[in-house]
Length: 490
Image 1 (tube, rainbow, N blue to C red):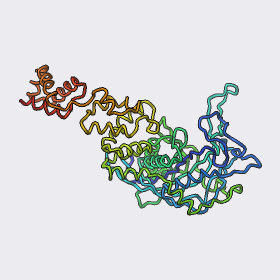
Image 2 (image 1 turned 90 degrees about the horizontal axis):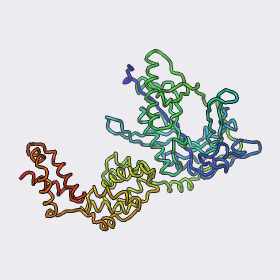
Image 3 (image 1 turned 120 degrees about the vertical axis):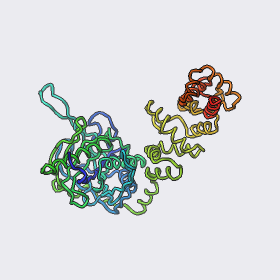
Image 4 (image 1 turned 180 degrees about the vertical axis):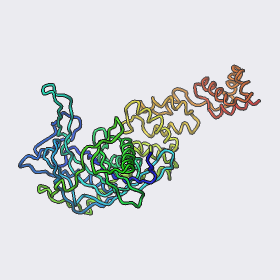
């Protein structure tokens, strides 16, 4: 077993975020996902002679807004470079990226890290840079060719030329959980900004992890290994944890770690060697001669900054401080911007914040998941949810009745008060109406009464359940508990 306590992991993430523009970074070709292969390419994407790339203005706007949201310093001047490498999914045999003069540098992101059995803590992770670049195509590795009897690969260039921003963190991450939370917070941020859908399954957000281990925090950095092919946040965490143990094991046995690229094998839950890692000199960067320098004025930068929404971290702090929610509830509610907006609007209409959080993260989220909906296309309005919560807090209906009518309220977006009035679902809250039913329930269950008096006090719940069944959930639960307890104590 490895003595991992004497070792420290050093982790950095390179996060590629696909920007949600309708056209590609340097051409008007479509970015639509899921269409037939090679239907969204043109001479510019393929780099044919005589073609000239032109920067999509919306790409620059989205990239600058992302930089500002991540507390990066946006450069007044930056440029594009050609990154040379030869691979079948790269139609030009070079990628237009940014090398020594990126769009933005030196930022940071705060993440909340919740590890099992440990207290949640906040970690500030530095961000080295953010730069713009174009995506490559996609290789599809097929089975055996019926004609040639050999394996083959197909290439789809639809993704080639799609706009990306690459966000490179500083080596401030120390655990797989921190890496996972950092990537999650990046996705929340770009979704809040509306610059990307962050869909990992479609490749809209991809993370490469650089990881090494060293003998304690004062030791020099070890040889880093890059891990690719992770399509979920849990995979990022598991890959980091596996690789940390693997590297420690190699060093403990007197071996050597080589700078290489490894793949995460989801089925076997291990990393596998793919190739030796290239250095920047291998790419032979040079300024792209077809694209001029980019100038970003302070006025333009300030204008885009004013358009930034309240970000997830800001909402979490507000929900805890102003609404008195737990850190957990604040995290869940702020995970998606439309859920957060729905919650805030419900509270603005007078609903108790804690009850609103419980209904939104519980029954309503469960309904949406079961019906493959989300808070962006739900029929229910925050006003009607606030009205239903008011009926509960005013003791007009019970929580049980609210749960029963909720699906109908969501589906038809009707007034909960009108529905309760029309169906006479109001709560029975007077003792004179409930007492006869209490006596009836007690008289009908003599064995349970005797068991209760013999010390089985948990049977109180049985009597309450019997009475609630008789009233179809309309009786005031608190009053029912009180009356039954008094009657059984006589």
